[in-house]
Length: 91
Ligand SMILES: [Zn+2]
Ligand SMILES: [Zn+2]
View 1: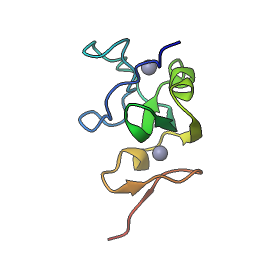
View 2: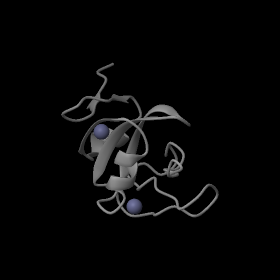
View 3: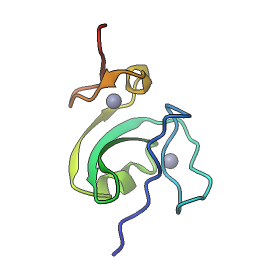
């Protein structure tokens, strides 16, 4: 089984499911509900925003490292990943 494509790290449209059927395709576009950290062979360690439907795809993309509910802090530019939810860096 080949590794499913899970999309580029989404910095242009934060809060949107990163799933795309294959490279270059238009992405899912649904609002993200889960934030899944996975170690992808393609991207290394990445945190992927996904909708409920595509969360299993992201979980299967590589060794699953954790996930939490997607919140506005997940899309904050300087937020850091934590198992119980992303937190913004206090500058
Ligand atoms: Zn999706
Ligand atoms: Zn998060």
